[in-house]
Length: 609
Image (cartoon, rainbow, N blue to C red):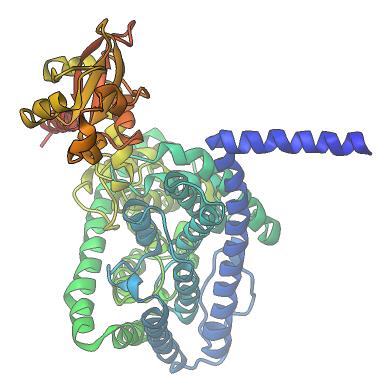
């Protein structure tokens, strides 16, 4: 028994050593934990949305809305129609959302970020990956109410924010670094997205690329994949792993290549309209009302307008994936899809623009699907011999549209493939996404995306180090200061004369053989400076410290800069590479920073305008 206990103790000791000494191992281990929490959160969120929507819209309101085959948890298709239920429910939810936000998380609405994915992006770049626990809790809860009452919003944005919040919370509990906290934030976002979509790879990739318009967070990819797979496993263990859409197999035919490019052009146009409409309704209408009437009345008005629009056109209520499946199966006309495209754009702009909770992700896929469906139907009508499966254009439109407006080149088409568990359209998905991204590169749905890591404050220090790692101290040899060097036996009165005649603050000390033996700063002899009774007894060697931090010509500037911060000093002795006693000069911190700024200017001048 003693041997077993000793073996377990040794095993725990090895585990602790690996955990503390290996950042990647620690991060992946935490990602498993985050994935479990994200999977459970996604399950609760999904059940909450579907259960409440069935109760409010179907059972009480009597509305009959289609649901995708893979998500049909309830079989009831409505009852007695009670039109008053819809605007009443959306208005009450709007008022409650505004009150909860003002009461418990007032800071979250000051930056006017309403979409969960955009809020996660802002937290990564500007808030060191910190998300207050109440924010995803309240935003997630009110998003359930918004979607369940009929608000035109998606569940992917809120669950992305909830997953990110869980990642941030885990990092705080285990006292991880700010960098690890940001990576776990993305891991949690990928877990929530991968679970709710039943798309582990697409969820992981989307989470690490959605925060930039022309880059992706490579270090977060492994943690995001681990978290997404675990979250997906938890979610599918509860709800099954059947695809969202039960649709036929689609195949790509080379003669359709031109039609898919036409689809990408149309998605670029509708994407521009979608983003411009949202920005106009949000800023030119609701933000002005908010300034005059406050948040609660603004969200309440948004709920009322959404409810009234839903009475006229119930197709735009909630997420709308059931209508997307009908479009894929060819059950919607071109006119119906055009009306759905316009109606969903306006309804989503009202819901999210008024600062009700929800996501822009699902509505963007919806509008993209209808855009693709219109092109597919038109091409099939005029070129029936070349386009035999117009439903496939709906899927390609979903991916291309969101890739464009979300500036996410890879994740969306993988998501669509995983949604259908069919990779037959992979080639046109990739091509159409690329064309659409090119067309929409001047605008983005998410306002807090950064162009790349160079622009992100989250990477400011890392990029500083990355640039300096590629340059040596010897490149600043001409800037090295040749200081006044003092011998160990220099008396203090002579030091006072030297100090008064120079602006030098750091003084190297050498022995009789000229070898570097110490260094001191002006702060080190302040206590003696005005003590005339002892100054005649003090020699330089009594002031200097022999614990010298030095650098060499072959050392990289990043390492040298780190040495400046170890002791919070402003100058370093530069010594010969093979002879640490031979002083070459003094390197100042300001010269390293000036060199960095010079390199950044050169990089900027090389970038295209």
